[in-house]
Amino acid sequence: MTKLKTFCLSLLFPLAACGLETSSAAPRGPVSVPASPVQRCMNLGGALEASNEGDWGYTVRAEDLQRIKDAGFDSVRLPVRWSAHAMTRAPYTIDPALIDRVKEIVAEADELGLKIIVDLHHFDALMEAPDAQYERLFAMWRQIAEAFEGAPDSLILELINEPRDKMSVARTDAVNQTLLDIVRERHPDRWVIVGSAQWGTLPALLKSDPPEDDRIILTFHSYQPYDFTHQGAFFADPPPPTGREWGTDEEYRDLDQAAARAAQFAAEHGHPMFLGEFGVYEEVPLDQRVKWTRAMRETAEAHGFGWCYWDYATTFKAYNIDRETWIRSLLSALVED
Ligand code: BGC
Image (cartoon, rainbow, N blue to C red; front, side, top):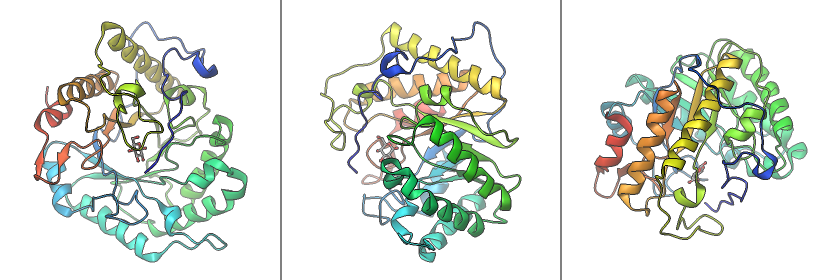
């Protein structure tokens, strides 16, 4: 699970850092962001995100979906590492067992009345050498689109998780359009989630040119400030030092200003906005995790965004699998006033 979230990612503010400045100033008045079909969502991290479900300590269980629904969430997001189960040469066939497993979870979620987002997660080779991987990427999406043709409307597809490195904003724009065209051949009306580069963060999204389409949802991820949310995280390289606290007036203001920019972008483009990942590493003191999580959730909702907490049961957990209990204060920060 090693992950190098770099210096640029650690600086959402000021946006000028790392050359990410944008012309979109924070709007002065309320803007009208189209309603998101996904409102309150839980990321099923660490399951099919691992090369083999269970390797990272979590296997999706039907009872978890029920529990998430009962707690007041309307959606789950299922990160899937398709590339670990697809041939590396043409025709890049995806192992039917993975497709069947995803179908099973999609059906379980639908039966419970949950929407479910299926994404393409951790395609690392694409980020390092995009040109060499496009054919494989497009072939995987053709197969995913075919496998889920006719699936219930509760299924939402997300094109690429956190493009980064050589997947620049411009490349991601172009690839998003190609992938959307592939998906639309079999899913003319399905909601599709589209994000941008630089680990799927807001500064990149604000510079992107999303496809023209009536059924897309824009997305960004936020773990800002990174040295707060990832302090001590064993998979960060290097792990930021522990002891960092969050919650100054300036930090609250920064958060709100970023959300206002995101809202303005969504309104200008006429698409819903979805904060697809946010969370704090499990070893950060709980009161601090709760404080930040509540602020993120309330800010997203105040600006009309849907959101998805990262994650249910692994390293940023809201649910403790060992004890089979919710972490109550964290759950409350997500679903209670
Ligand atoms: C990754 C996870 C990671 C999380 C927080 C997600 O995008 O897929 O593996 O734990 O970000 O860094």
